[in-house]
Amino acid sequence: MFKRNVLPGLILLCSTALMAVGCTDHKQLKQDLQAAVQKQEQALANHFSGTVDLKLDASLFQGAAPMAAAMLTTLKDSHIEYSGAATLAEPVRMEATLKVLPKGAASSIDMPLLIKDNKLYLQMPAINKPDEYLMLPLDKGPERLKNTGHLSSVVYGKLLEGINPDWLEPGQQQETLPGSTEPVKRITLNITDKNQKAAADAINGVIPGILSELLQSGLSTSAQTDQWKKAMSTFQVTSPSSVSMLIDNQGFIREQSGKLQFRVDASSAVQAMEWKHTTSDINQTISFTQDEPKQVKSMDDILRLVAAPKK
Image (cartoon, rainbow, N blue to C red; front, side):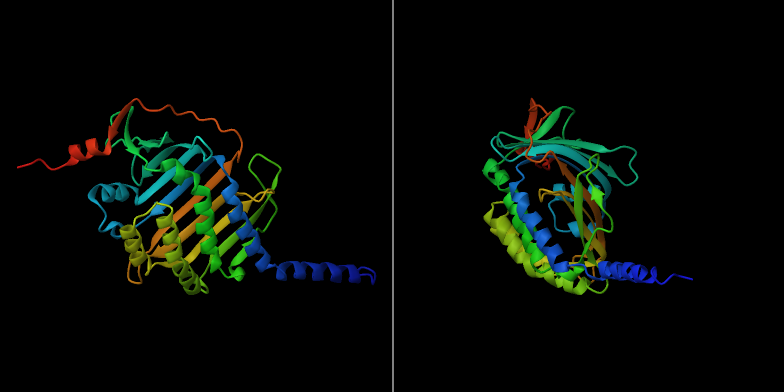
């Protein structure tokens, strides 16, 4: 039998536990997430790594250019790993290595990538010889790359506009950054059977604004923007889907992860992707390791190789 002086403490403990469970400040979670998204504009250098798992239906690529369709078909059911570094301050530079493992393949397809001096270098094993890269000039590339942080902040900000705070949940336990004792805050957006219609409506409502931002930034043409607006007008996110972010003490997003299921329209197949993206050494001195390729081919060279022979 409990002693009388034990009962008040037990009641207080139970009450505190109930209050902790039932009093999550969802509005504050949204404000914290919005602040972290805005903070990304200040991330001008970092190392990054991540994984992507794709389970896409080939119908998603209908109407794409033949070369693009062939590449996307290779990726549609695959596991992708990547790592690299970037700096958006002068001189703008980014390097990364992608490892693509299509379903059923015995080994991965490695694709090094380098952006330097207003040029994009990409090695594609299906097109390039060993140590040979495809080179694409980037018109106004540095200016666009410097605005990547701003554009990312704006895009995420618009996506958050229509998010109901009640869809957000805090982490269930205290977390720290990998290999560190620094605490981080986890905030997760959950899309369930109950809110998937409202979530789809919210996303569709802000997509035109996002596409307009891409157009203004020079990352899309008017024709491409109109095409995407038409295609995305029927986009439907489905449950179960989720997006989770880890925010450090400085307010930077250090990890993004998620599981997304969607349809391009009500009658199409369900597409699925799962990803995780982490960053480190934010605004620290970045060490780059890739050298500028000596053997390159232009896109015109590639197009000549794949062009149909004249009769």
